[in-house]
Image (tube, rainbow, N blue to C red; front, side):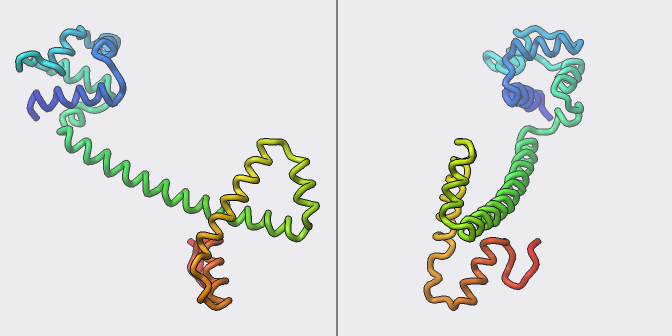
Length: 184
């Protein structure tokens, strides 16, 4: 890795942490690798192409302060970005799957609440709404509204379906599995 690439990596690590050159100099000094802010500036933002040389001690200090090995610090920045992008995309996929699971659970719970209100009659709904505090009332009304919108959206286009096909679609909406299959 060239010294220029190492300097870019140092600048990126600082930016990633929201550290100024002053903060970087303080972190290095506190870690036992004293380096003045002007030296940091000459490494990450050289004037007229004259970059300050990065000594082995400096590199060890940067690795220590960034909590990475020296080997990791020397990985080209583009490879770090690729790795972090892959990690971010995997995390996004995990969160998307979690959100789908939570959405299904919300639909199931709200469906149960709606069923209970329907079974208990209109008076039970009004009685419950009067008995709960305002934040709970707002959460319930918000979720009931979302539930209604989701049900309408999911059941659009079912006019040509048989009752059995509509039930299968509703089952899939509520439980997220294929009709007749196991939810996993």
